[in-house]
Image (tube, rainbow, N blue to C red):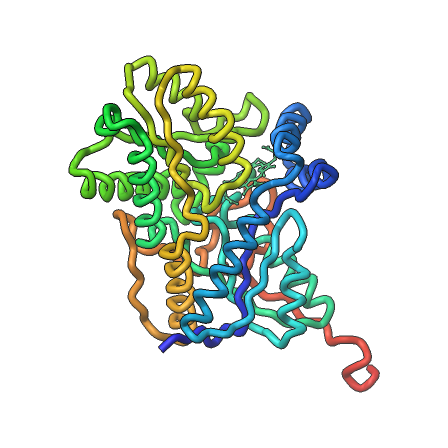
Length: 379
Ligand SMILES: CC1=C(CCC(=O)O)c2cc3nc(cc4[nH]c(cc5[nH]c(cc1n2)c(C)c5CCC(=O)O)c(CCC(=O)O)c4C)C(CCC(=O)O)=C3C
Ligand SMILES: [Fe+2]
């Protein structure tokens, strides 16, 4: 029987993106406040957005995911309220949480549009959750928030990515298909951020390597052929003096072409939908690099609103709810790392700039809720 108790609302928590040219600079300022991103990089990234009319694809992707999640929930007889809130652009997280609180919710389960550990992909969302919960507490609204475990190695995420790679291989000419290389791509982060990611450090890269290996193994099972693969990075930012994860996808394509590679599938396993990084850094820039090199290249789809992936997210919601009720549900995991934690251990994905409260952590202390004015006997 389907059940999400004790949760009385679900939150789709995402990054946010601009919806038109006038939004671009204010959005970039929201994202980069206090982060020391060089002005030149910001202007460059603004150009990427303006190239697409100042509109990021991410919000429409989230609207579609919200609809797909809602349909899957209803098909299981779950009529729990579902809201969407972002860290960096409207609809904002605090407003989304206030909305479900007004509807009567007191215990919310968050589904992040980010599958991996790291400060940028996990703890920063947890800090924002803690800040929003504190803002609402100051308004007299009590809300408790939990999150799903990291789903990078959930079988539905891995299988959906594997099917996408198989479909991309089908799109290559038969003559080069069998020897095509798989190039798994994710967002670069500073080396220092990877070094402190997860409870023991290095989780960001380790998790991606695990997914890449698991996807490559499923592809090999299906085609009967081993395809050589690598994990590479896109969207490097920060000052040039700061080391970030490498190689860059464009450099890697040049390297492969130099080695005489026949063809490539680009598999953006680091992204859950076609973000700006995918439509610009991969579909625009990397595909152009490949074309210049004469290297046949097909981009695999992101999981997006794939029905199997969406069902997997709802399975994870039911799993998390069962745990919260004190049960011991099965926790399926592909790859070799095993299922990840749902309550982040102390120091997990440490913030290297400041020590801020982060929700859904073992050391998180919920804020005191201010009694609403006009109540409490006029004290
Ligand atoms: C790991 C990771 C994810 C994946 C996890 C997740 O999905 O959250 C992610 C997602 C995203 N990043 C995005 C956009 C941006 N990220 C930036 C900057 C940065 N990202 C970083 C890391 C990540 N970012 C880092 C270490 C920085 C440097 C500044 C800092 O330390 O924070 C900048 C500033 C300009 C620049 O520096 O490039 C922008 C505009 C969008 C929206 C895209 C759209 O509009 O479709 C999404 C989904
Ligand atoms: Fe980013």
